[in-house]
Length: 263
Image (cartoon, rainbow, N blue to C red):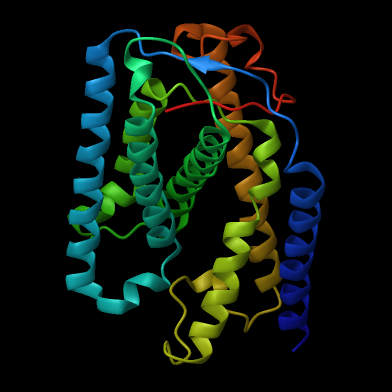
Protein backbone atom coordinates (compact mmCIF):
# COMPACT_ATOMS: atom_id res chain seq x y z
CA UNK A 1 0.00 0.00 0.00
CA UNK A 2 2.86 2.41 0.76
CA UNK A 3 3.94 2.29 -2.89
CA UNK A 4 0.53 3.49 -4.03
CA UNK A 5 0.59 6.23 -1.39
CA UNK A 6 4.01 7.46 -2.50
CA UNK A 7 3.04 7.51 -6.17
CA UNK A 8 -0.27 9.17 -5.33
CA UNK A 9 1.64 11.84 -3.42
CA UNK A 10 3.89 12.39 -6.44
CA UNK A 11 0.87 12.92 -8.67
CA UNK A 12 -0.83 15.19 -6.14
CA UNK A 13 2.32 17.29 -5.81
CA UNK A 14 2.56 17.52 -9.59
CA UNK A 15 -0.99 18.82 -9.90
CA UNK A 16 -0.53 21.25 -7.00
CA UNK A 17 2.75 22.71 -8.23
CA UNK A 18 1.62 22.97 -11.86
CA UNK A 19 -1.74 24.44 -10.88
CA UNK A 20 -0.11 27.07 -8.67
CA UNK A 21 2.42 27.96 -11.37
CA UNK A 22 -0.26 28.27 -14.05
CA UNK A 23 -2.41 30.42 -11.75
CA UNK A 24 0.43 32.76 -10.82
CA UNK A 25 2.48 32.82 -14.02
CA UNK A 26 0.19 31.73 -16.84
CA UNK A 27 -1.41 35.13 -17.38
CA UNK A 28 1.74 37.15 -17.92
CA UNK A 29 1.76 39.99 -20.43
CA UNK A 30 2.81 39.18 -23.96
CA UNK A 31 5.51 40.77 -26.06
CA UNK A 32 4.07 42.43 -29.16
CA UNK A 33 5.33 40.58 -32.21
CA UNK A 34 4.40 39.90 -35.79
CA UNK A 35 5.08 37.19 -38.32
CA UNK A 36 5.14 37.05 -42.09
CA UNK A 37 5.88 34.21 -44.47
CA UNK A 38 8.81 34.87 -46.77
CA UNK A 39 6.69 34.28 -49.85
CA UNK A 40 3.05 33.39 -50.52
CA UNK A 41 4.24 30.02 -51.83
CA UNK A 42 5.84 29.27 -48.45
CA UNK A 43 2.48 29.87 -46.81
CA UNK A 44 0.73 27.44 -49.16
CA UNK A 45 3.46 24.82 -48.77
CA UNK A 46 3.08 25.04 -45.01
CA UNK A 47 -0.69 24.73 -44.95
CA UNK A 48 -0.43 21.84 -47.42
CA UNK A 49 2.11 20.14 -45.16
CA UNK A 50 -0.24 20.48 -42.20
CA UNK A 51 -3.17 18.99 -44.11
CA UNK A 52 -0.91 16.11 -45.16
CA UNK A 53 0.04 15.56 -41.51
CA UNK A 54 -3.63 15.41 -40.52
CA UNK A 55 -4.24 12.77 -43.17
CA UNK A 56 -1.22 10.75 -42.03
CA UNK A 57 -2.22 10.94 -38.37
CA UNK A 58 -5.76 9.86 -39.20
CA UNK A 59 -4.44 6.89 -41.21
CA UNK A 60 -2.15 5.82 -38.35
CA UNK A 61 -4.89 6.03 -35.73
CA UNK A 62 -7.36 4.15 -37.92
CA UNK A 63 -4.81 1.39 -38.57
CA UNK A 64 -3.99 1.11 -34.88
CA UNK A 65 -7.67 1.08 -33.92
CA UNK A 66 -8.28 -1.80 -36.32
CA UNK A 67 -5.47 -3.79 -34.66
CA UNK A 68 -5.89 -2.87 -30.97
CA UNK A 69 -9.42 -1.55 -30.72
CA UNK A 70 -10.26 0.63 -27.73
CA UNK A 71 -7.19 -0.73 -25.93
CA UNK A 72 -5.06 1.67 -27.97
CA UNK A 73 -6.09 4.59 -25.74
CA UNK A 74 -4.25 2.98 -22.82
CA UNK A 75 -0.89 3.82 -24.40
CA UNK A 76 0.84 7.11 -23.59
CA UNK A 77 2.27 7.15 -27.10
CA UNK A 78 -1.26 7.33 -28.50
CA UNK A 79 -2.16 10.13 -26.10
CA UNK A 80 0.77 12.16 -27.37
CA UNK A 81 0.03 11.28 -30.98
CA UNK A 82 -3.57 12.45 -30.62
CA UNK A 83 -2.36 15.66 -28.94
CA UNK A 84 -0.08 16.28 -31.91
CA UNK A 85 -3.01 15.73 -34.26
CA UNK A 86 -5.00 18.31 -32.29
CA UNK A 87 -2.07 20.69 -32.68
CA UNK A 88 -2.05 20.29 -36.48
CA UNK A 89 -5.83 20.76 -36.66
CA UNK A 90 -5.69 23.91 -34.54
CA UNK A 91 -2.67 25.19 -36.47
CA UNK A 92 -4.54 24.87 -39.77
CA UNK A 93 -7.51 26.74 -38.35
CA UNK A 94 -5.26 29.52 -37.03
CA UNK A 95 -3.18 29.70 -40.21
CA UNK A 96 -6.28 30.11 -42.36
CA UNK A 97 -7.61 32.77 -39.99
CA UNK A 98 -4.35 34.73 -40.33
CA UNK A 99 -3.84 34.15 -44.04
CA UNK A 100 -2.72 37.76 -44.47
CA UNK A 101 0.69 36.66 -43.17
CA UNK A 102 1.50 35.42 -46.66
CA UNK A 103 1.70 39.03 -47.88
CA UNK A 104 2.38 41.26 -44.87
CA UNK A 105 3.34 41.09 -41.19
CA UNK A 106 0.43 40.04 -38.99
CA UNK A 107 0.33 40.87 -35.30
CA UNK A 108 0.42 37.74 -33.23
CA UNK A 109 -2.69 37.07 -31.13
CA UNK A 110 -3.19 35.42 -27.77
CA UNK A 111 -4.47 32.35 -29.61
CA UNK A 112 -1.12 32.18 -31.36
CA UNK A 113 0.62 32.12 -27.99
CA UNK A 114 -1.55 29.24 -26.78
CA UNK A 115 -0.89 27.34 -30.00
CA UNK A 116 2.83 27.92 -29.51
CA UNK A 117 2.56 26.49 -25.99
CA UNK A 118 0.82 23.38 -27.29
CA UNK A 119 3.57 22.94 -29.88
CA UNK A 120 6.23 23.25 -27.18
CA UNK A 121 4.70 20.46 -25.09
CA UNK A 122 4.04 18.20 -28.10
CA UNK A 123 7.60 18.63 -29.35
CA UNK A 124 9.19 17.91 -25.96
CA UNK A 125 6.96 14.88 -25.34
CA UNK A 126 7.77 13.43 -28.76
CA UNK A 127 11.46 13.53 -27.85
CA UNK A 128 10.74 11.67 -24.61
CA UNK A 129 8.72 9.00 -26.42
CA UNK A 130 11.71 8.30 -28.67
CA UNK A 131 14.08 7.87 -25.72
CA UNK A 132 11.74 5.68 -23.66
CA UNK A 133 10.57 3.49 -26.51
CA UNK A 134 13.89 2.85 -28.23
CA UNK A 135 15.76 2.69 -24.94
CA UNK A 136 13.40 0.46 -22.91
CA UNK A 137 10.37 -0.75 -24.85
CA UNK A 138 11.52 -1.56 -28.39
CA UNK A 139 9.68 -4.44 -30.02
CA UNK A 140 11.29 -5.85 -33.19
CA UNK A 141 7.84 -6.95 -34.36
CA UNK A 142 6.43 -3.44 -34.26
CA UNK A 143 3.92 -2.54 -36.96
CA UNK A 144 4.49 0.12 -39.61
CA UNK A 145 2.51 2.80 -37.84
CA UNK A 146 4.60 2.35 -34.70
CA UNK A 147 7.63 3.71 -36.55
CA UNK A 148 5.68 6.88 -37.25
CA UNK A 149 4.53 7.20 -33.64
CA UNK A 150 7.98 6.58 -32.16
CA UNK A 151 10.26 8.69 -34.33
CA UNK A 152 8.76 9.57 -37.68
CA UNK A 153 6.42 12.07 -36.08
CA UNK A 154 9.35 13.84 -34.41
CA UNK A 155 11.20 14.18 -37.71
CA UNK A 156 8.05 15.65 -39.22
CA UNK A 157 7.74 17.94 -36.21
CA UNK A 158 11.21 19.29 -36.99
CA UNK A 159 9.95 20.23 -40.46
CA UNK A 160 6.94 21.89 -38.84
CA UNK A 161 9.31 23.70 -36.47
CA UNK A 162 11.26 25.08 -39.42
CA UNK A 163 8.08 26.44 -41.01
CA UNK A 164 5.90 27.67 -38.17
CA UNK A 165 7.83 30.61 -36.72
CA UNK A 166 7.49 29.12 -33.24
CA UNK A 167 10.04 28.90 -30.47
CA UNK A 168 9.80 26.79 -27.35
CA UNK A 169 9.06 29.17 -24.50
CA UNK A 170 10.78 28.66 -21.18
CA UNK A 171 7.63 29.76 -19.36
CA UNK A 172 5.77 26.75 -20.79
CA UNK A 173 7.64 24.54 -18.33
CA UNK A 174 4.64 25.09 -16.03
CA UNK A 175 2.61 22.75 -18.27
CA UNK A 176 5.19 19.96 -18.57
CA UNK A 177 4.02 17.66 -15.77
CA UNK A 178 0.28 18.05 -16.29
CA UNK A 179 -0.11 15.71 -19.26
CA UNK A 180 1.75 12.72 -17.73
CA UNK A 181 -0.05 13.25 -14.41
CA UNK A 182 -3.45 13.18 -16.11
CA UNK A 183 -2.42 10.05 -18.01
CA UNK A 184 -1.24 8.37 -14.80
CA UNK A 185 -4.61 8.96 -13.13
CA UNK A 186 -6.39 7.65 -16.22
CA UNK A 187 -4.30 4.50 -16.42
CA UNK A 188 -4.74 3.80 -12.70
CA UNK A 189 -8.50 3.91 -13.11
CA UNK A 190 -8.31 1.90 -16.34
CA UNK A 191 -6.12 -0.76 -14.73
CA UNK A 192 -8.68 -1.24 -11.97
CA UNK A 193 -11.65 -1.31 -14.35
CA UNK A 194 -11.77 -2.08 -18.04
CA UNK A 195 -8.12 -3.20 -18.39
CA UNK A 196 -8.69 -5.85 -15.68
CA UNK A 197 -5.31 -5.44 -13.99
CA UNK A 198 -3.25 -5.09 -17.18
CA UNK A 199 -0.62 -2.36 -17.50
CA UNK A 200 0.32 -1.04 -20.98
CA UNK A 201 3.88 -0.44 -19.72
CA UNK A 202 5.57 -2.73 -17.23
CA UNK A 203 7.15 0.17 -15.29
CA UNK A 204 3.67 1.46 -14.37
CA UNK A 205 2.97 -1.60 -12.22
CA UNK A 206 3.03 -0.88 -8.48
CA UNK A 207 3.87 -4.34 -7.16
CA UNK A 208 7.54 -3.61 -6.45
CA UNK A 209 9.27 -1.14 -4.09
CA UNK A 210 11.11 0.50 -7.01
CA UNK A 211 7.87 1.55 -8.73
CA UNK A 212 7.97 5.12 -7.34
CA UNK A 213 11.44 5.54 -8.84
CA UNK A 214 10.05 4.75 -12.29
CA UNK A 215 7.33 7.36 -11.88
CA UNK A 216 9.82 9.95 -10.64
CA UNK A 217 12.16 9.09 -13.52
CA UNK A 218 9.42 9.49 -16.12
CA UNK A 219 8.35 12.83 -14.68
CA UNK A 220 11.94 14.07 -14.58
CA UNK A 221 12.39 12.80 -18.13
CA UNK A 222 9.65 15.15 -19.29
CA UNK A 223 11.57 18.10 -17.88
CA UNK A 224 14.86 16.91 -19.36
CA UNK A 225 13.31 16.58 -22.80
CA UNK A 226 11.67 19.98 -22.43
CA UNK A 227 15.16 21.33 -21.76
CA UNK A 228 16.40 19.63 -24.93
CA UNK A 229 13.52 21.13 -26.92
CA UNK A 230 14.41 24.51 -25.42
CA UNK A 231 18.03 24.08 -26.53
CA UNK A 232 16.95 23.20 -30.07
CA UNK A 233 14.71 26.26 -30.05
CA UNK A 234 17.55 28.50 -28.85
CA UNK A 235 19.72 27.19 -31.69
CA UNK A 236 16.95 27.99 -34.17
CA UNK A 237 16.67 31.56 -32.87
CA UNK A 238 20.43 32.07 -32.85
CA UNK A 239 21.43 30.48 -36.14
CA UNK A 240 18.22 30.79 -38.17
CA UNK A 241 16.61 34.09 -37.09
CA UNK A 242 14.81 34.33 -40.43
CA UNK A 243 12.66 31.38 -39.29
CA UNK A 244 11.44 33.35 -36.26
CA UNK A 245 8.88 36.17 -35.94
CA UNK A 246 10.10 39.40 -37.56
CA UNK A 247 9.54 41.63 -34.50
CA UNK A 248 12.07 41.39 -31.66
CA UNK A 249 13.48 38.24 -33.29
CA UNK A 250 16.84 38.96 -31.67
CA UNK A 251 15.25 38.53 -28.23
CA UNK A 252 13.32 35.36 -28.85
CA UNK A 253 16.03 33.00 -27.70
CA UNK A 254 15.84 34.51 -24.21
CA UNK A 255 13.82 31.90 -22.42
CA UNK A 256 12.60 34.24 -19.70
CA UNK A 257 10.42 36.16 -22.17
CA UNK A 258 6.73 35.34 -22.36
CA UNK A 259 5.83 35.98 -25.99
CA UNK A 260 3.16 35.24 -28.54
CA UNK A 261 3.87 33.83 -31.96
CA UNK A 262 1.99 32.77 -35.05
CA UNK A 263 1.58 29.80 -37.36
